[in-house]
Amino acid sequence: MTNKINIAIVDDHALFLEGLSSLLKDIENLTILITATSAKELLNQPNLSSVDVLISDISMPEMDGIALSQIIKKQFPTIKILILSMHEEIQIIKSLIKIGVDGYLFKNSDKEVLVNAITTVAQGNPFFSETIRNKIIFANEDEAQSSTKSILPKLSEREKEVLNLIAKGLTINQIAEALFISHHTVVSHKQKLFYKFNVDKITTLIKKANDLEFID
Image (tube, rainbow, N blue to C red; front, side):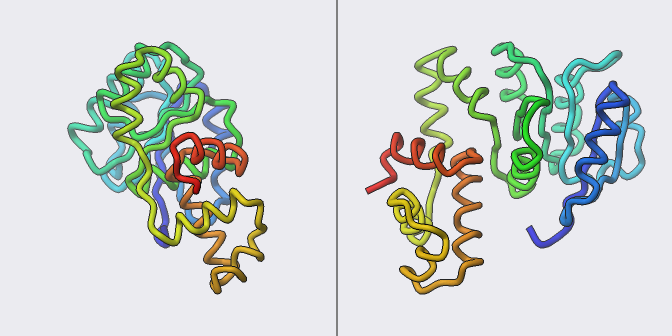
């Protein structure tokens, strides 16, 4: 996205809240608009409607992240919700997905993965960590089939070309030369592939794309 992404962060642990804010404050396309230590504090912010992405914990006093997500989706449907938590319980995850949260990461995720997740959900695409996705798959095979079908990436012809060349082991520069496009354009396509497959590594991208029969 070329525009700034306005971020709100809510977490009842002040040190984590401060650390996360510090981690994200220098990212060029992100603006931390609101920080709050409770759901009620967040909901009382007069500029809440200006938020693009809400990063929320689950376990919080008075009102948890699940209840908060329900309110946000009803009152501020344009706000994307990214859950950042250590909870692994499949029922909690399923409840949040039913509510319509846009992403779910564990708190120990790398900075690069977190920034990718924020950018991805801001663009209207889901971002769930591989661990979360696998939990959903193994929880119920039938649900997994329908879920996998619903999130099957849609690629442009150029993205398919770039993906296949990545799978063949070509470097960014080699791909640019082969397709007569710029280095920057190849990098952009690679990032879009990361977003669409919900991955953060080339090796994982290739494996997932091959499993889903995207690679020739």
